[in-house]
Length: 248
Picture 1 (cartoon, helix red, strand yellow):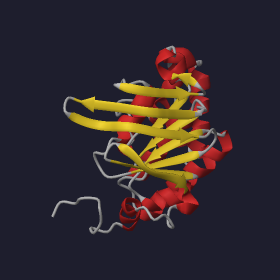
Picture 2: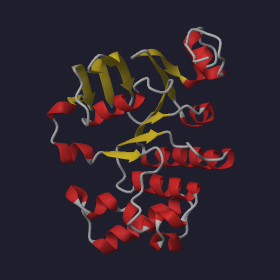
Picture 3: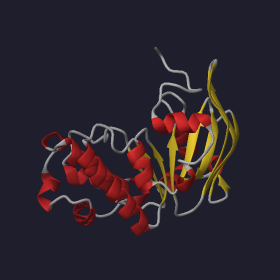
Picture 4: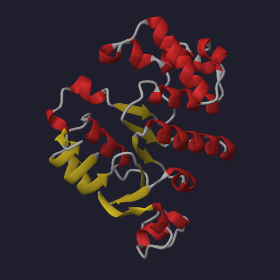
C-alpha cells in the first residue's frame, strides 16, 4: 500500500531522513520506533505530502504521492494526533465529524452527527458525550474522541502518532485494544509512531526502527525479541548501555 524508496529530507544542515526504504503492506499494522528527534513525524508528513522530500519516491497504491490531487488523496487518510489535537471551541460530535462537515467528504449535518455518535459508541463513549466540549472530558476520553475522529470517514490508511502518550497503563491498554479491533474491522493499513513497547507488542504486525535517518531494522513483530541488531535490542530493553548515544 505504501512504499518509500531512498527518501531523503534535510532542513538546512540537519539531515533528518537519509535514504529511507520502507514497505507497508495493505491491511497491515506497521509500527515505527526510534528515539525522539529521529524523524518519525517527518516520515509521516512526507507520505501525506505536507513535507516534500528532497529526493526519493513515495507511492501509495503504486502511485507517486506528488502526482495526486490533494483533496482526494488526503481523503483516503485518517490521523490520530499526539495529544489528541481536538478543537476546544467545538462540541465533541463536531470534532468527530469534522471531515464530514466540509470538503469532498461533506455530508448533511444530521447525517454527520449520526455517524459521529456511532463512532463514539464504537470507542466506548455514550451518546450524551457528543454535546460536551473537549475540556469537559478526561484525558482518556479525549483520546477516544480523537480515535473516533480518525475513523469517522472510514479511511483506507490511518496514522497514529503516539496514541497512548499521557495515559495511565490501564487506559493505554484500552486504546491499544480499540486500535487493533477497529483497524481489523475496517481493514485499514496503518502506521503508528510510538516509544511505548507495550503498544508495539499489542498492535504491530511489523516493526521498523528509525535511527540516524535510516531504517535500521524492519521485520515482523515475532522477530523483534530475537534480532541480533544491537540498536534494536538496546531500544527495546531501554538500556543506557549500547550503540545508541544517551545524554549523561
